[in-house]
Length: 170
Image 1 (cartoon, helix red, strand yellow):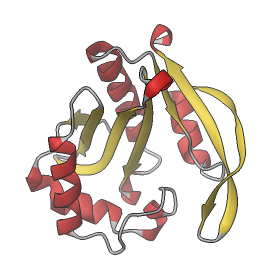
Image 2 (cartoon, rainbow, N blue to C red):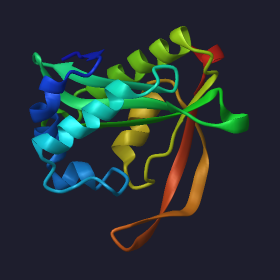
Image 3 (tube, rainbow, N blue to C red):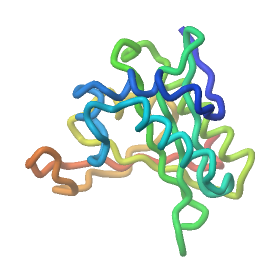
């Protein structure tokens, strides 16, 4: 099974809502997403991504089976980190473990490195999210270390892991 990444369209809001209105998916994401995640929430997010500066925010829908099944984005950092981008992604639960996210990560990294002056892309998955760590490793990211007691999720203090990919490594 393969995927492609594509620019968001407002008509993708329903598919995004179906993917994100799942506690198992949201357990692996940062806080702040509404639950249940509605089509209006999807429309608001997609509108924000479409109006963002395309040299600062690289946001895409992940498409498989002719429908949007997830979201992926790289977000330029600031100041001395201005040529670094943070990677974030999610995918509908029924598509977990099929290699789709690894493919999407490779696609967005190639896009960002080809279309911008970004030299480093990093991701910080929760340490307990071994599947996300594996996605990054399979996509060529290097494990840099564990960020101890770096987040509070559902009242628990948790570690995160730091991974990065450099433009020179692809």
